Image (tube, rainbow, N blue to C red; front, top):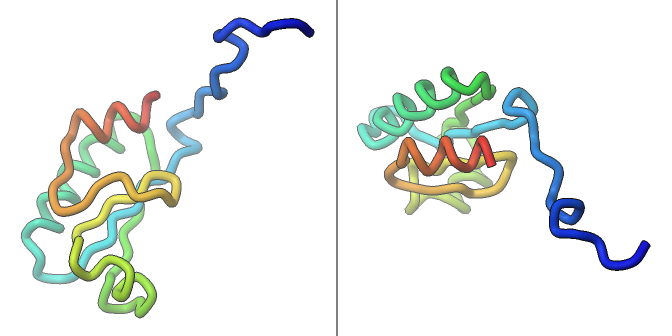
Amino acid sequence: MADMTPLFRRKQARVPGDRLVTLIRKPGCHLCDDAQVVIEKVCGDLGVPWEYKDIDRDPQLHDQYWEQIPVVLVDGEQHTFWRVDEERLRKALTD
């Protein structure tokens, strides 16, 4: 094939149900609670599964993210930390 058009070079779109949002949090953290509210709303609207992990129960997560919690991962990649922007998360899950 000769020169491919940009249409054919784009990455394949992902189905929202195939995505995964992970919230890394700790008990008693008000920013974590705020982040969870946004994640529940966005993931609920889009049909995206999500989970949370307690940073106090995982030494590796503790070492990696302690100063940034809450941390949000999308498909295992860090999306944001401290504050979750609803529109930015929605865009990351629908692009």
